[in-house]
Image 1 (cartoon, rainbow, N blue to C red):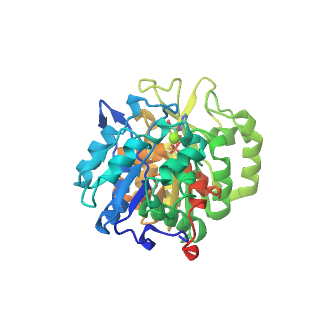
Image 2 (image 1 turned 90 degrees about the vertical axis):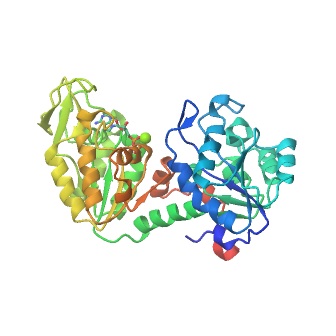
Image 3 (image 1 turned 90 degrees about the horizontal axis):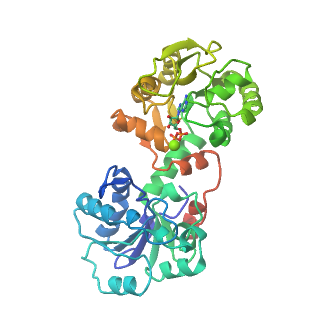
Length: 394
Ligand code: ADP
Ligand code: MG
């Protein structure tokens, strides 16, 4: 990574505003998945060990620019304190007089401060100068560790970075390094696997992966748009008609580099109790929909994956939330886990599938950025990264 890192900063005695991605699910006042909190710990610990006073800020959920108790950061503070083993002072605001007072009265041994949800303020998503200015007055330095929010030009990701000496956190650094490893200098063969719901979400990603990967395996709902482009009957499967032509073009250009399923699990309804059966591609009955890749496809995809030295995976192969349609995703996950390749998994649902299978440890890297990692793979410049100074400017 050529961005300035938190390790390049002299943080001793400094107040450091850290943008973290604590956008975690909460149920009955408890954090139900603390992955993102755990992934932020190295940066927080680095700061504490070097005598800094960290002040953390994140958004959570989609409150509408005003306080909403449902999205308060209190459950996050509680979990963070348990994981960190250091006191966490949670404030009920993110900026303003009270926050400034609370921060002023703290010494370096006081642990960390967690500010209230940044999206309780309308200036956050608008990247309003006044809000960014208020945030900047809270600290001496700014560290961005929220890769998952880097594709948004908000006050806590961009505005404040323009107003304070800024650097990337350790998680941000890891995310960029792993994705660059895949995109810029992959060990070959490089096999990419794409699935999930929509072609339209991922057209740019398909195009980008086709240019860098040796083979692109496509499953999930998006394969039906490709089948339609080949003139196959797809029944009631999810198809995006406006992208059929584009899918046809991509297939022609890619040739053997793009590999589609040969068999499909179909059912009349998207329900556990719907009787599922396996059919050949091209023989999908009109009154059924394709909900997973079939066993022969799992085997063929598995052969490609086993021969790979690098694997990038985004998007489940089927409706993995329902057991009857989870086997394709499971088969692919097990192949990736057993391949010995450098494996990178990105995307909210793909990561959920891997963790449901208990295979997180078997992957080389799990990206915390859903949308952000896809935009990165597409080759888009993420505003939260672009705004950080390069190493040589440091
Ligand atoms: P990610 O979050 O990993 O990027 P997406 O959000 O693109 O993945 O897609 C995940 C969703 O796609 C899952 O909810 C899954 O049920 C759905 N999906 C996968 N295959 C199919 C299919 N054949 N038909 C309908 N939905 C599907
Ligand atoms: Mg998703």
